[in-house]
Amino acid sequence: MGKIYAVEYVTLDGVFEEPAWSGPYFNDELAGWQAANLEEADALLLGRKTYEGFKEAWPQMEAETGDFGKKMNGMGKQVATTTLTEPEWNAEFIQGDVVEAVTRLKAGPGTLMINGSASLVNLLTRHNLIDEYRIMVYPVVVGEGRRLWDDGTKVALKLTDSFTTKTGVEVITYVPA
Image 1: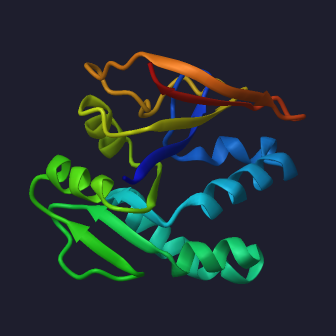
Image 2 (image 1 turned 180 degrees about the vertical axis):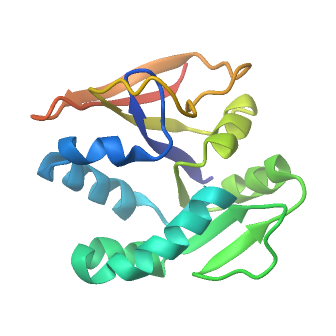
């Protein structure tokens, strides 16, 4: 049986979108942790918006990011979309019933990592399909923007790991309780 884990950047007030606010706090500790997350994954599971952003950014960043960029660009991507029709960047599109499709993916072998993709994370959380939440809480309050958790999404979690980087980022790992 496969595993699905979500790796997310959030501010203290829960905002996850446009994480330019993370730059001043990113350091070697977080880079190593992110590399370990990516190394564990067999494929990415993404929502359309995150896929489109990554597809534009990562091919240009491979030279500066080395093995991380090579894996990011080379690995398969499962993308939940109702609008895209021409898969690129090693993607397969999940169209139709996303919960059913992800349930089938999870029943197979392999590990899927979600980045960003808040709508997808919320949907999968409501259907108990995410096995682990790895969240980086940045010591900044931005006061506005899309929050990771939508109104109505509920899940009880159990802390399994945590550490604080030298720049003050709390890295917390939860599993459903």
